[in-house]
Image (cartoon, rainbow, N blue to C red; front, side, top):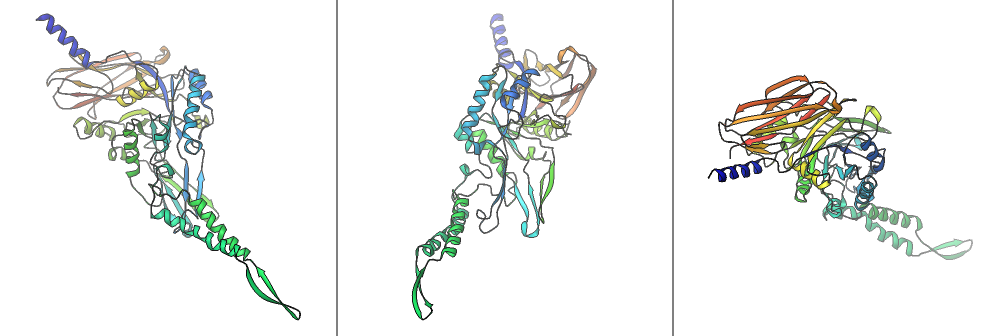
Length: 485
């Protein structure tokens, strides 16, 4: 009996804890190459990453970086467009093949393909009023884990003809095209008229070249600009709220991919004059939208800007609390978001990282860790960075790490173990804050390496624990949940 009991205990412990040892994989998430708006090639980025000890690059080329405006009733005919380099017009297959070649050139750095997507923008104002504003051009989502070109090509976003449908607005854009018919008739028809030449009267035949050419020109232009005569799923002339963003999240989720809300507290605004017309752009911070949307994978929590949503008791803790209580189907994980294009304004490739805890160095393992929350966000100082060597919640023989759920009986002892070091063996003073259900329950300060343990009794209510570490930069863990069996 004692042998059977021991065997059962070992089996339970094996199920509750991590099945295999996990490797720390430092990665830079949100990187652009010269395939879109970055300055460096994929090979150059991989070489830079290898030099800095970065094991993976999560590339996020711009998917469709196009903004357009057209006047009613014929928007296609009057459309003005501003477009920058992006991968959809260049060909999704070409993009994926380019990633494969860069991987083969430097297998020591894992390159994970992704895209930065602008789901929807909208205009207010009018050129007739000489004042226009385009909103939410930086309210973006990052998409990873979609390797099928057809699926990636059809993302439901503003301006993507591959995701468009037939509708009355498309028919309206075809209307000016019918001018080709009368124009062609004018060009083909010879009109006879009588002209006096001195004392004689002669018959003259002429074609209406000018009006015929004008009508044909307008009609052909309308047909070319209206092609392929489909309706944008999210036209940019009205505020559609969060519907386009949520529908993109759900599309990617159904296809097996992951989505990340990008830089939710960053602000982007400015203006430019085109003659007498003022054109402005504005994207306001949107941290509250993390609570208004669901089923996305993660959000940018640490980046080179001031952030508040991840502070104790803030929006992230409210979101995690909803999941713990069963009011949300899945949590949202925190990542470090680089937004690297080049070295201007003090940017560095490895300043902000996401450290994944992976079973192996592969794209599959990274995406799996992404979904599970097995990662932490990191912002480094120039000459030092923090390393989370241990973060575990244990009750008896059962244990859980970031992203996992520990099952514990009510009144069972809970032990939270934490260990933080400084990369390269340097010593730095740090402060570790342990947050439980949005409230700071303990804090430790001291030089690295530092180890600490927090003990308490489980009260039986759903709970989550997470870490926020300051010193030699910043480190933000993902939560560990505790529930009753």
